[in-house]
Image (cartoon, rainbow, N blue to C red):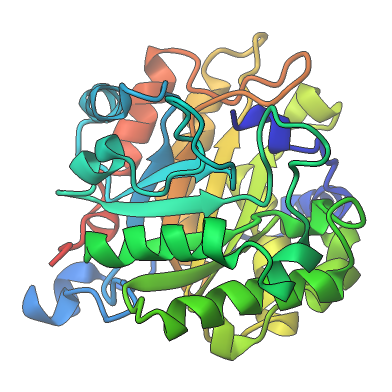
Length: 348
């Protein structure tokens, strides 16, 4: 389901940053001390689900349609804690028989969401559909899909009641020109946002997620809907290693360039989300993936404004592109990393 949407990108800007960072002392990664931030009440999330004293930890957990709760619990058992955010994906298909890919907030998602936050990624696709069935940004912006798609899913979210993160066409900078122009994307995004508001849906935290791939800087600038339409900004950066035939990049080397560019060019104050992060393994050095995850807490505390980090525990298409945790050492390392108090914030 998810792999079909991903376009394999070699982040040349990140590779440049790897060379620069390798010769420099890493930024101060001590970050704020959650214990010194005040009482538990002071650390409760804001109305836009921002944790003021630390950051959320979440993940994309591979699953089939009906087994999301079981797969989430199995992941949590391995990582030694409950997830703050669970990430799921949907298209804009219409229901046909038992098809539910286009249904936001399935019964399984709602069960998972009883004790966790949900990030719903909504794509202007009809997975497995014909070319004629594929929605376009122009159709969405015109209101052509309001009655059959937008309004139906808006009502589902409104009826759910609890706040959710919602992303429309993540990594939109890889979807143009196939889905339309950058201007058409902005119009489509704003139409969905405004339509939800018209229908009284006030429990959405609008999350704009890009690749962070700096060769797409012009596209990202042109496709930002505007501060009044965005609550959080996410970006997806990885250590792809042999998957993209690049050198090994540390966690810091994958994150700093995109983070700094977004802060300078998109928003200097919106909360940021590492909406997908992860690393390939190194078969020649089995401990290397574990060492990579051990860096996460210290580096993340030095990334100003990053308030959530979601581990991608799956693969991308192509050889050497499995980004899932590869061995017990990697699981143990991630387990220790996300036990850090900075990643353990009150959900209520």
